[in-house]
Length: 208
Image (cartoon, rainbow, N blue to C red):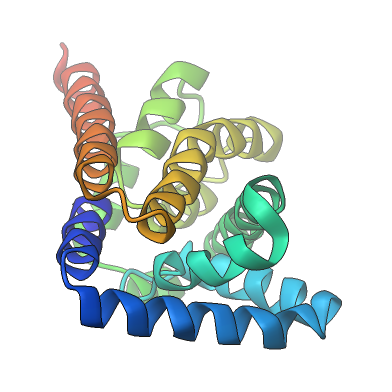
């Protein structure tokens, strides 16, 4: 839903000549500043992306256009994907080494309830659905608390973030190119993927 909301917000933005022109000027200006400090900018973008994978109220989606004009589509995707993976690793580590009490302070009790329905020996396919169907900050904490095998978790995380990373980059590119219909289309596609994964996840969890 967050991706669809962002797509709708960007659609409204590109529909307004004044707002769109102002935002593109801002994106270009910030991009020029970042390009003068490329290493620092890349590190900061990765760290912000990592933070967005750990907390529900923060997203790097709004700054991806700046990254896109600075590093291009391939570079932006790589940095975004790396940041999300690092954030997932930190979330998993917090859950594994600090336990349920700390995780409860960082996320909701409802999220941790998945820990009562998913085993530490759950198959890879189920964990991949868990990654695809829920917000990125939830699976890492839950699977860390469960002490789920780290390498299997990391593989599922890397695969699950691929389509969302590609969609985020295309969303930002569609904003820059002012392709409003594509903005909504990408948002709907991401929501569809997430909803399908969520439904499949619960079908498997609810199966006798």
